[in-house]
Amino acid sequence: MTNFKSLAFRTTQLALMLCGVFCLTRLSPANPPTGPWVTTLEKAKQIASKENKPILAMFSASWCGPCNMMKQEVFPREDVKKALSAWTLLYIDVDEQEGVTMRYGVEAFPTFVVMDQKGEKQASLTGAQPPKSFIRWLNALNKGPELKKRLAREPQNAKLWKQLGDMQMDMESHEEAFESYKKASKLDPKNETGAAADVAFLGALKTANEDRKQGAEKLAAIERQYPASERAEDSLFIRAIIALDQENEREARDLLTSYLKKYPDGKRQDQARMILERMDEKKQSAAEEQTTGTLASGDAPPPAKPSAPLGRPKE
Image (cartoon, rainbow, N blue to C red; front, side, top):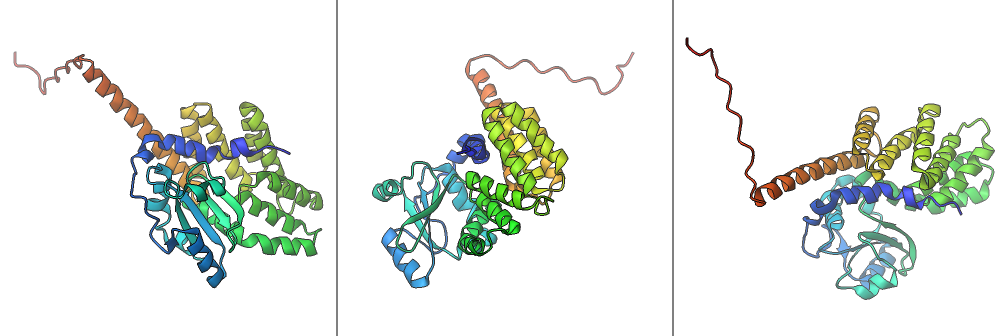
């Protein structure tokens, strides 16, 4: 099976890495987010059965900075609240409910686990998410069953295969999306669905997992070949992630700034801004630590240069 996972998850991983100590300072009590969250699996199953809703569980901890970022900055948004209204919401404090955490195989936080009304795991997502990405994931989960039913009735419908691929991309199921896009492209030789760009994009991701430089070149080629496609936007953003992964912060900053200007309504605007903010905070923190270290070592700072006279001296 083609492996996209390594680079596909770098977006969230790098954002959290750049968050670093800044996220870790956002400690809060081990309380669920504001809203209709319950804190036991049995209670969630009762409510889910009564209201005929699936369960969305958040596995979290008070010491988890990214978890608290989601609680403080993502869940209070009205658009996120609307998306969450379709779910029975369950909050699991991993320190207090180790058994439940082990049962669902959760090892990183936050992890969001989708369950049916009996508590059986259906899907999961690991890592803090920007609001738009989180909403897309939730919406994709809701649309999936009906879309698959339609495809069972119309297996030669390229548009449906394309829609399925888009949904699988939103769910981070890149291997499945790649297969769906290839079917759509095969059924659509004129590329009316735009699936050719999707196939090229995921192929470039696969290459980038093995060779970052070559993968970045293929992504840049997608921007040139399919400039009006959604994958052109994705390619520019992922090139910035590759630059970060290679510790080329100047190139990453240029690419992220370009992304913000070129795609003012882009789906990764929140992520791009967050990464740039964390880069600035990291740079400022490093400068402050260097200054503190210099003063602590006993070395006096260099004397200030005398200011220039404001006027000509009198003769």
